[in-house]
Image (cartoon, rainbow, N blue to C red; front, side):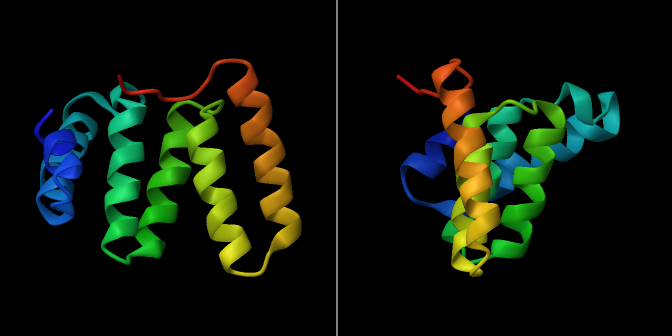
Length: 110
């Protein structure tokens, strides 16, 4: 929860610290499949805000390994693909994101 709080305050370095503590600890103790996919998504977005697109992509791919239908991860990967001029891949990822979004597989914080 602290990671989300710091993310909301736009303190992305602190958010990343708390997300990393949780995610890395959960992976070490229980395995990647037990990590909350939303924490991984927020860690990816924290990396983005810190201008670290390489780690952002790694975390988005991790989120999809944990929960393959997550529309948010597909959407943000599409943004990265478009930014790197891979428009065909971006379109494919957007189609996947739209399909998953319509099926209800997205994150909506109240």
